[in-house]
Amino acid sequence: MCKNKSLFEIILKAKEGDKDAMQEIILRFQPLIKKNMRNVDMDIKDDISQDIVEVIIKAIKKFDIK
Image 1 (cartoon, rainbow, N blue to C red):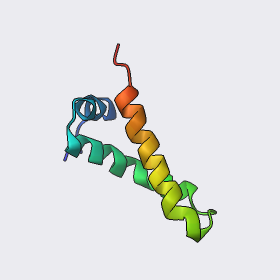
Image 2: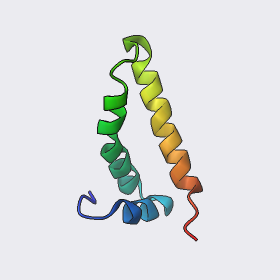
Image 3: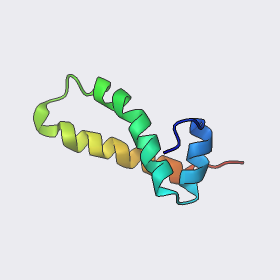
Image 4: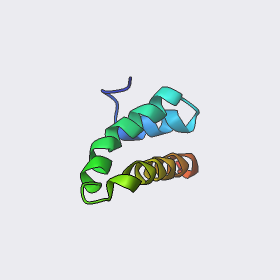
C-alpha cells in the first residue's frame, strides 16, 4: 500500500493504471463516505456508496495533471 505517500502521488499512480493506488484512494475516502451516509436509508446505502466510489474512479481518470 501507499500509506506514506501524498494523495496527489497516489492519484498519479492510479491514473497510470496502478490498481493498488486506486484501492488506496478508495480506502482513504471510505471514512468520509461512511460518515456522510449515516442518515441514508439502509436499503440504498450500499448502492449510493458504490455510486460514490464510481464517481471517485471516474474523477481520477479524468484528472488533468497539467
